[in-house]
Length: 455
Ligand SMILES: NC(=O)c1ccc[n+]([C@@H]2O[C@H](COP(=O)([O-])OP(=O)(O)OC[C@H]3O[C@@H](n4cnc5c(N)ncnc54)[C@H](O)[C@@H]3O)[C@@H](O)[C@H]2O)c1
Image (cartoon, rainbow, N blue to C red; front, side):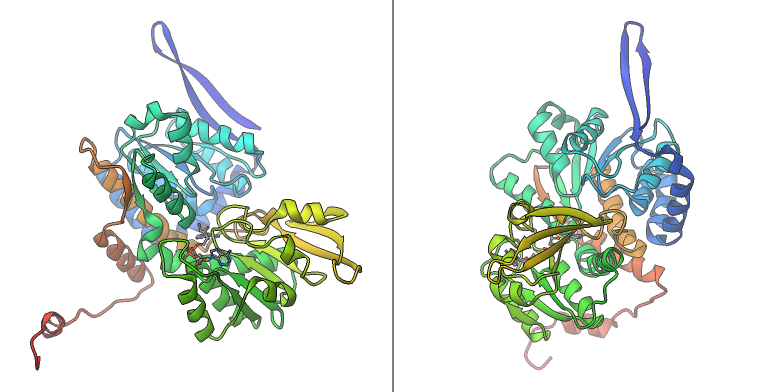
């Protein structure tokens, strides 16, 4: 375990503990630098923001605490914030998604300005220990992915809330939790819902999750997807992307939705209808369990696939999850049903059991312990660089807005990313891809605002 910890004399009679990076594989730093260089070369939008921040120093005098998947693309966000004048402390938002090489490189890059506390394969205690290190840094701005950092802050360190200007949340599940906290009057911070910016969820959730989840399934299993029945649970932004790309690879795609509105979006019925008219076979849980070869959950919900469904599944079925938490597939139930559980390969666990109906031996395979398949190492590499370039551009710009609001008290709650930030990020991404749009003519603008008959 690589760790640097020093005691700094800050006043004659006081020693102040300065926490420094804690990582597991310092020997991987050279590899990490290569990974970061590759990501940097493919993240031009964040690069342009970083160049601006170097001049304007929006975060001078501020500390930013981060809980995000710590891998190469996130490294570029951390560098951007640091170069904008912040002291940055980073932990992971998931026990298994850290890239040890990336954090090794970051840990030795700029001691005192950028410190990371993370390694792959953490226990729950280690995971929260790392988040606590970030909070020990007394951040003024927080960036979260899934709301664990913000919840920890409210539950264990309420006295630190007054030091914080506000936060940014990266994912759907985090927004759902923040809104629940706000409804209960528990949220004491203003938090930008970065996930809800069009230039985030339309790209990251839809196209990023699709490519990275399917890539991880293929790397872990090395099986052909064409001809297989692939079932996607949840036809939200992540689900529709995954379904479309699975179809493109030749899979027969089924979609499972539920009735009602479980999140800040249209109902499951409407989403199921969209899936149907997109050409997918829309099924209920029992129908899907019987026919699927590969099952992918992306609902943000709990126990979506459970015992009654495992019982119906075919021998050899492969299960995985790309929703934020590892609760979508009921792994404890799967384990309980099994006579033997074994790791058969990196990222693949086999659950051996007798088929409930025929009594014949049956094995179900779970990828990455039911955690985010697209980020669990070694098969999960996370979203493509260009996707995270857009998502992290919004994070960086929202942090700048928070920094600018220093001294002005913003009301606690979940805030929309301002339209200007959203649209300008989309424009920056288009520019980086060499796309130049025409502007509407004056006549067209006027026409769009007319309402009188005959116009
Ligand atoms: N893997 C990644 O990199 C990544 C990226 C972005 C978001 N996420 C996570 O993925 C999850 C989904 O995000 P989203 O933006 O698509 O959310 P969303 O709210 O747009 O869609 C979720 C859908 O799941 C459906 N659903 C809920 N319970 C269900 C059940 N029991 N069975 C079937 N369908 C059910 C809902 O009706 C909804 O349509 C969240 O946890 C989010 O945080 C992961």
